[in-house]
Amino acid sequence: MISETLRIWKICARLLLLFQFKLKIPDKIQEYLSEKTDSELALIGCRADDTRISYDCCEYDIAVLGENDMGLGNKIMQVGNDTLEFLDFPKYDHSEISLLNMVKLKNKTSNLLASQDQHSTPKSDIKRIFIAAGKRRAVDSLFNVSNISYTKAELNSAMNLKIAAYDLIEGILLTSEIRPMPIHELNQLRQLEVHKDFINEAIQLCIECLGIERATRTIINRSYKALKEILKERFDIGLLESKIEFLVQHGLIADCYYYIGKLVCNHLEKKDYAFQLNYHKLNSLALDLTSDYENINKRSKLIKIYCKNLLKN
Image (tube, rainbow, N blue to C red; front, side):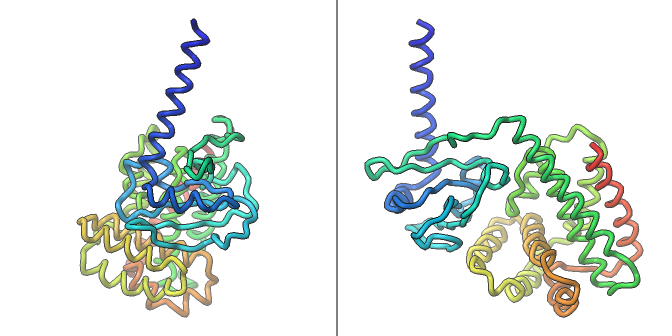
């Protein structure tokens, strides 16, 4: 009797998984992906995490796992009214944060089916992976805030403070076992259940460092124009623009301000000091930088303290 009940429960669970997956991917996308029989594909991103947090502007992120000869990697395409973004993972392992939520896609008689990853990562390992990634971001934040000094360009001090604040926010989310998603990140912070006082204080400090209270349509319009120039060579710039426009149209002004800053800081963090200085005017417009250097240095010292606390806990 127990074994029969268990068998029925497993069948119901499988059907529920397929039903949920049907809700995640529209029929036209399923039909298109079912033709890619030579590639190992997986749904990742916010559509795989939780459909309730996805916006209409969010794309369907499809990971191309391992080597493939289909020419799918790192490109964006439109299928019906929806956007697909293919992301290459030629050599992947199960410690990659972006793949921890993946739903593998299998072809069976030309119909897409969802399946759990057969090498699913144990919960204890997932927690360890998230915490390790979070602490690495705290170290990145420490590095960036250490670049702040009066011996360097004053504008770069304001920029490095913002980069450090974004890094620390990522570290906080990751150590809370939440995968940061730039367009949803501010909302992820709002919904975060915090059990330590210093985390609450660190989040509040980061929000102040980012200057989100300054968010207005006028400032966003100015930042948006600068961002388009800074990121003009990215293959996904059209997708990023559509997300920014969606946020503005729906009155999500603070989230839009946060998102633009995050995109620019992610870009600049990978560039050297000379590059940052050469584009200081565009960077200043895109990041809405201010020149309150007394506050910049005061906040940079506090960021250091909270980074060290996150690394110890």
